[in-house]
Picture: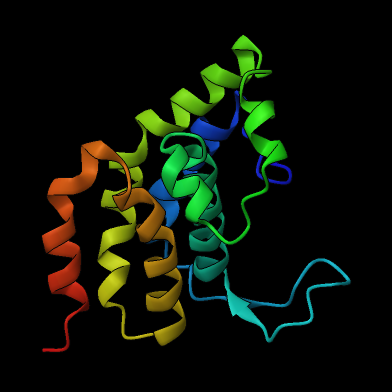
Length: 149
């Protein structure tokens, strides 16, 4: 994935990432790999959850034009771009939309993580997934997990 663009390999990679979220090495801390990534060290799990959230956001883009226009990042010239998508790009987007239930199921356990950074990042990845029409039935459960007990 580059600057929000999805590719034919994105969905299979996202499924792999979702499958390894609970791997024992997940809590291992690392620093940013890029010079502009000056944040504090974070766990591998936080980085993977964040990436899945970006996949979910990109997959949702264009699905609901009214929601896109309500986003503070929306730019009117993006509307013209939607009609220019080629069949490979459309297939990549659809593949990422099709796996959203699997991604949600992999991310949901981390909504109740004892690590606040994991919980926050899982929430950030969950929100764009719950915009999917196929996942509206999971909203009450997600809300219950986030409600203080």
